Image (cartoon, rainbow, N blue to C red; front, side, top):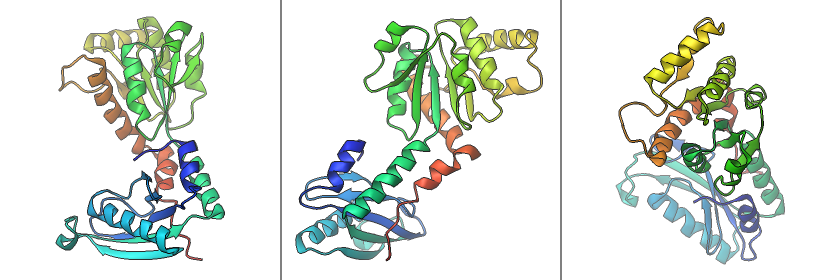
Length: 286
């Protein structure tokens, strides 16, 4: 279950109390890795340690702590038929009632996690660009919608991070290592300029352009004519989202592309820190 930053702050300081439930260690097949955590109050939860009976037991124990005044607890749970969860592994859960010091620690970890999120630059605020923006909002990335047209950005999905610029290529140059670039503007010539700049970034995790095989061929001809050498063009994904599903609805394209991009982002060395921070919040054993 997701929660925004202000919601997390409220949960951590709920009048009835809050318990931090952390996956302290795992063995074998488990729903989440060590470091995953959730927050539990009397009426609300945020984040997840994997769902199912394991999570149900954790919520029940956390709420018992809130009622009986306990500050800490620990459960060693085998994930077998006896609890109706057949992963087959073993999970050790640590429970801590949240005080102000722990609340600040959780908030700091969440801020670090947010800052380390891989960047996804979406060039073009049309139907597919907006659908991609909505899709990526659900994922652990920072997506930025870039366009040269103010009116299109003003109509972007609520909460989208947008950049209005007359020179979109500048956004490519200033992007952090391990970023993904999705190019789908209203102008093929502009697409080509942005793609060329993105392919010059050897540290990019993904460079994709909406289009067809013929558009790719046209780009390749232009790229070579403009002096694009080496094997850089081989890194270009075009068409994006694969070719097995031939559905051109923006939402379907967005779902396919999001999966493709996320696979590239999480496999890129520059984004190791973002993955590592998922394991950073553990029980304090002091």
